[in-house]
Image 1 (cartoon, rainbow, N blue to C red):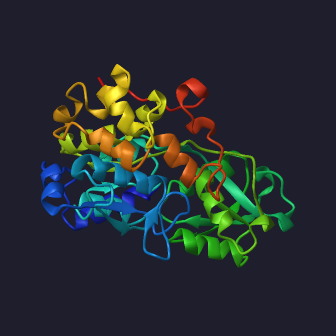
Image 2 (cartoon, rainbow, N blue to C red):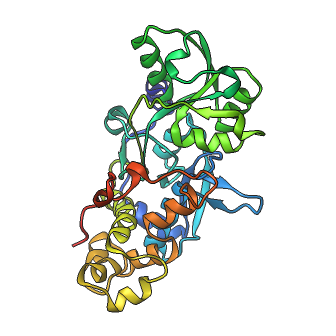
Image 3 (cartoon, one colour):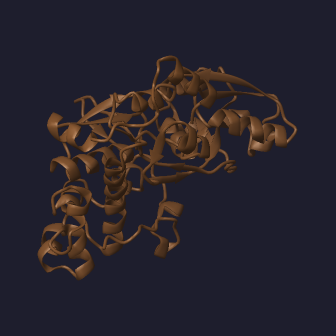
Amino acid sequence: MLKFSSLVAAGLAVGLSFGANAGTLEDVKKRGMLSCGVSTGLAGFSQKDEKGEWSGLDVDVCKAVAAAVLGDASKVQYKPLTAKERFTALQSGEIDILSRNTTWTHTRDTSLGLNFAGVNYYDGQGFMVSKKLGVKSALELDGAAACIQAGTTTELNLADYFRANGMKYTAVTFDTSDQTRAGFESGRCDVLTSDQSQLYAIRIGLKDPDSAMVLPEVISKEPLGPVVRQGDDEWFNIAKWSLVAMIEAEFLGVDSANAADMKDNGKPAQKRLLGTEGDAGEKLGLSADWAYNIVSQVGNYGESFERNVGMGSPLKIARGINEQWNKGGFLYSPPIR
């Protein structure tokens, strides 16, 4: 979700090299803290409360990596970043991992010196309008003013959709999600467009959430996931398998409540996940209980989804395509063996 040409130019201007120096794992261990890039505030994904505590689906990925590497999910320093700032912060080494509702695209994966470590939320771009507008479909938005967050894939998707359907629009851009919401609420635009997950998060932040509705059209594929720098395969593996561990734990029936029992009394696959059998931790350069620490301290993927964005949260998003593969969704994790 970024203007790629401007980012690459900015990176070259400050002399960034897009390859990482190996040794992120040792740097994190030495520091005793993981530096994780998150959003400036998006309900359900990464948001700080009045006590200064961060929570969300993306935040749980940060916690999972900290639990795997440091044995303590609380050992995370969160760095709030706008969409325009996020990749430069990762490229420059300011953060160790980016977990900020970021779409995995060809350009980002091939020309920015970055590696996507998987998908923690399958999404798609949609539209939110005021009910007063009387619009039931995005195809009725010809001539509309659209609120957009700058530096995102949203901009190109919107341009493609309107051009393909012979419609015109006026873009009204903002730097942050909060600014975009405020622009929509103040009437500066007719429609707010973003990933559907973000639309639901923005909607509950409106003074009158019932005044707005999300239209049915989904106009893009937005696989969102954590990102690390290229050039450090050890760290890439840790980020990737930390997310896999959460997904695989749910598939195997291991959660934060039963992980301690499963560690000693579970089936072979459960024991391999939790470190009482096999050498998965050693192969990652981690302790044997790396995945046990993730599941016992953060939970499995289903637990994270439910409390942050699912029916047990204010967003009340159905699992849908973010369900396990054997329940009709897209989640299919490689086995830990």
